[in-house]
Length: 506
Image (cartoon, rainbow, N blue to C red; front, top):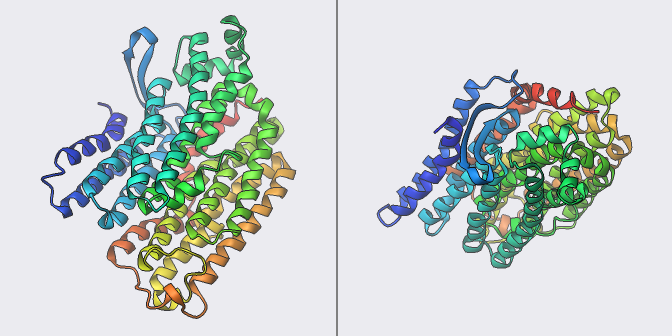
């Protein structure tokens, strides 16, 4: 297998071994072994990083093998700057989520095997370049996520798990119909070949030949499947209960990695294959993204459940990514090319940086919940800073990173997005600042209510972080500072790719 195939399938190999040996493993080994296999992604991702040439904007480490010849289906994987960033994010968050939460999990071998299947499925989505295997990875990720939520989640986990699957499968059904139409018209599932046809404006012609299919209907089917995953407003109703009821490690992975699958699909599939329909629909989509930025932030202000607050914050931050993408497509032109570069660079940086800060916040809420016997209300705590100063410092850094404080990683992506969107659609950028204001209010309220003031209720005698919890949060916090003062460490991987994207703008 190629390097990319090892990246995808190493977690699955680990899942199979952990499952087969589950009855022979000691409880300690059953917790450690999944973490070891999960680290394979980071190790192999760093190998790919060492061999990756950012100046080459095309795909690297490409592997293409025939699979189902009768349908022209191929096993086709490849890597560019966008994929590499998300592989590294997955390689970082997956082992940390397992390491920091698995000691309190019942049946750790089964839990670890399911988590490794989920990890491998997400990696397949980020690396596959043919719709057939890509869709298998996309749908397969639902199975372990469903069981992780249902079996290890909170009191409402069963309903949340079913809601998550029904919403996602419903959107995926429309996407499958859209790609079935594309295959009937073009005879290929390959993203690269379809993108070439899309740039040449031939998709609509080929759809018309097979029966007068309306290209916008096919476009809307694919759009709906991706919009549910992000989620784009108003397809967001499934997310808060799912993130709130999922166990801490699963919440970290859902918000840090799986939510990026939808944004990745917009950048890898929807925009290249449907440039003209996306441009035509960009303005109403821009309004929907703006609603996600503003309304989700105000919804977070109304939450007293800390997990639901962070969940709505996740919708807010991911909506910035869609805001910039739709702004580029609605107003992109030769005169606004610099703004488009800033917006798209900010989108990719925001995907990575949000993964760090949101995963850290969910872990911190999990610590509060564990210490207090299941409480996670905004008014259940007080004075935690006095009882647990290290925890307060770590959580404070994650909060201010999510807030976009200059000097931390969250600032860079948001600044570039606003700089780009302001040059493309000033009214949208100005309106989105309401989301920034609301974000500051609810995150600072979180900080003030939980960590300051007199100790009360669950905040009394609060135990500080132990070694495992510090080891889980520390790598995330180090990267928050590092990428805050040296964003070029990540931006250097994607700048040539973004320049090549904007060179194709009309």
